[in-house]
Image 1 (tube, rainbow, N blue to C red):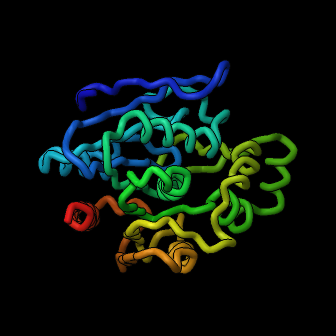
Image 2 (cartoon, rainbow, N blue to C red):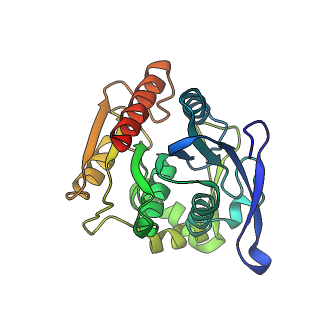
Amino acid sequence: MGAAEPQFIEVGKNGQRRKIAVRKDAGRSPGLMWLPGFKSDMSGTKAEALSEFARERGQEAVRFDYSGHGTSEGDFEEACVSNWLEEAEAVFDTCTGGETILVGSSMGGWIALLLALSRKETSRIKGLILIAPATDFTEELMWKERFSDDIRAAILQHGRWEQPSEYSDDPYVITRKLIEDGRSHLLFGSSLHVGVPITILQGALDPDVPLGHAERLVQALPQDDVTFTVVPDGDHRLSRPEDIELLIRSAGSMIEAVSS
């Protein structure tokens, strides 16, 4: 697969099959696999910068769009965490060639953790870099934290609610399906053990995934080697030049550690 144009893989069964867009740069291991955030795609600033970094080093780099996102097939309102995890698993299984470092942003951090746990026995996942990881966000950050009684009632009654977005002209549609499906993938509440080094990059001024939420994830990983870096003036995107530099340094350090 070349980087210029996305290739497509089919994911799902029977009537739920959808074509998922993937970009892959061939290279040596360990490769990097990018997992984007909620309503984000593989052409964002961080994804592009990480892919360029990998190409310059000759490392494999894989990125993709979830169904209902970017150039992949699917209706966003019909999709949920189970779909997006299934797609991440399919991309990992079929498009990565060897040892791989997962790099997940926001919701992609949650998906990366779920993927690492579901593919733990393969021993091919060698590290995680999580940027403002939105672990369990449908339940902890939306349903419990931000949604009023009226919003929760609207979702239960009508099956959907339109949430204004600071990052897009179009609102985020939050569905009952998304909330209820998310509950089958919750990670908080038990001690996690991924078994690989984990780097977490978190902005202290992040309004979407608060610092305390990332700290909670660190506490949930007592057996793992976790490096937790707080950017004092960082927001949720962490896409400024200095933030990108931090991401690239973190990726380079993990590649060196895995390769040694």
